[in-house]
Amino acid sequence: MLRRQIIQITLPLALTFKIRGSQAQSSFKEWIFDNDNEVSDYKIHRSGSPVIISTFLGDATWFNGKNDGYFMTIHPLAGAKKFTIEALIRPDGGNFEQRWLHLESQDDLSAPPGLSDTRILYEIRVIGSYWYPDAFIHGAGYRQALRQPDRLWPTGQWHHVAQTYDGSTYRSYVNGTLQCLADVAFTPQGAGRCAVGVRLNKVNFFHGAIRSVRFSRYASDPSQFALLKHLRG
Image 1 (cartoon, rainbow, N blue to C red):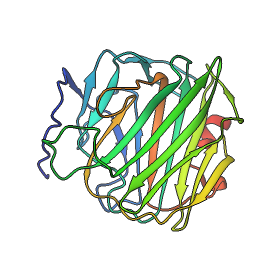
Image 2: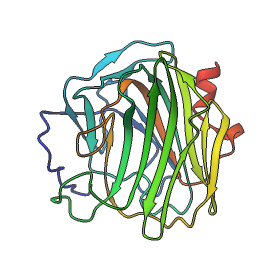
Image 3: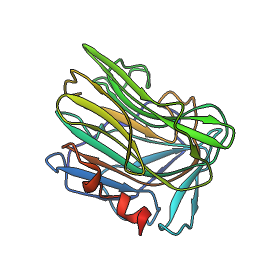
């Protein structure tokens, strides 16, 4: 097993969660945040006190929007030329600007986290009892946000979100419905680290629950979204 350097943040506790999919050569990785303590190759370090809750989807992690977050020393899409990120999330309102997923390329893990120019973000914007997604990719020669503020979704409910890149076009979806798209000259990102429920430098905390996140090294059509079927039953 490869030795991985521990992220340089004050992290009070390490947990393990179920991770489906094989190692670096797998076409997908699925992270299920149910805290059943199965052995995995990636330790999750905890900030704050995220809570495991029971839902109709299965157990999930709830983040308080103040100081809860998970941190891992892996960029699950490092080297991918195409990708799909899917997740089952339940935004519960709170601050306008929230980041629930932050992937960052960083060769030097002793460098301050969250400041790399090469990153993939998944964010939300909250307006009263509604929200909309904000997907973002940034690297050498490209920078693109996908957001549609006039397409709002209710808080307090479970939703499937996805962002995809097929080699030329970057797309954002909610519950299988296209929100917006843009042509991007994306290039593969390198190894690094990630945060769930917060930005890597511990700002813009997410208020809500996350059941699972799936990373695929190909661009899925909405009919192929693996996690959406769980929401639709």
